[in-house]
Length: 151
Length: 345
Image (cartoon, rainbow over all chains, first blue to last red; front, side, top):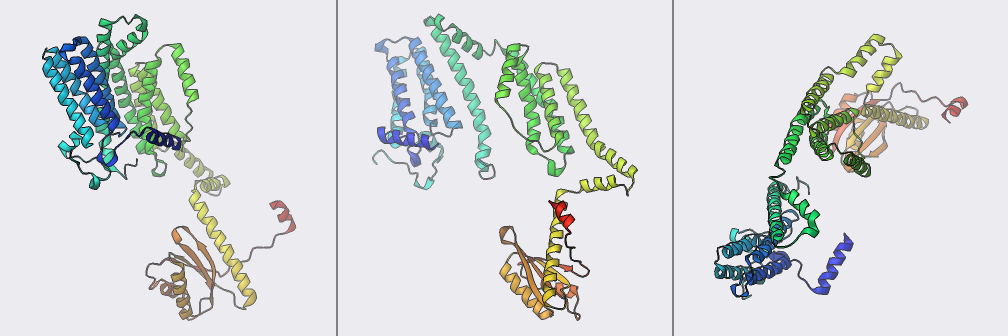
């Protein structure tokens, strides 16, 4: 146990990766992943690039699977990965459905909306779902304020 | 996490597990869709085995019959095990009752059913199972031999359900539950032993031995403690009588939570009552409690009952019990002869 902790501490010190933002909630690396995955999907759905529907479908399925795993981890292992999971399950299928209906520009637009949502979340470091339902999952609710973009 | 310490979180867990399984099935659905999509565009011949494995694992409609058979077998195993567990709950004495064993009986039946379904009729799997069971050892000492019987009943019902011989499983459940119930109801072994003891007569040494064996360990321990106390007080009495002419003839055993306050109170009360008293022994116990032992002579002008009332009065809760012991007629233990000393060795 102590060895694992020391490895994590070493990794945090070496690479300065914010593993968990603590009282503000959320697991930043999974949100970076969500942003990157949605960007890749939006990129493949971009009509001028000419990616096939099958490619978009494969990528959407992979992203949906990863979102499911992240949400499962959030549920059972009490990790704060639920935001990325909740975003990555519906978002790729919305884009995929729009591509299937040949409304590709709307698919790209939706992709950008999703990317901006997760980007906003990364900046504010506050789960949108929790904020919507007034849930405070922090261990220290008194110190859990929602910072604004300006702050 | 202890449920008692965090009931809210414990109540939240089942819903989380349900959602987890929903997500798991959704993940499997996505994986099968992905595999199907990949196989239409790419040649997966190099991954034929894994492809077939994933397809067979995720294709629930193809294996629907097997899935339903497994669920049905598990359901029946659960149903058949419940009466056995119920008989266990009513037939066990309070001090021997083990709630975890009740759950074990039910779950073990279902687990054995699952194992038997997996093993089926294949010899290789059976050998594999032997190896796995040998590797994973469950060292658990059951309090009662009868508990092991319940475990065996669970295993038998589970095996029958696993092999699909439900008619055997149901009659196993009925017959074994009935047998265990009747054995308990008519106190089978105990009644036979009582009958034999009565037949032998009260004066019989075997009957006395049997009665002694029936005495609980706690009682034996109490008897030993009381005997030890008597011997100790006797020794104090002998030591006191060597100094004084009059031997102590009484002892007070006081159970106290606050030793200092109790000693102060008892000293004052005994001084008022008269007579010569001395604190012979203090035995400390758990949680700061102690037992004080006073020996002395009860004055002629008072009685032990009056002394007890005096000692019990105004104790403010720091004295839990006062016991009077008469030391009249106690004889000193005989000195050991050389023969006896040799025997002790």
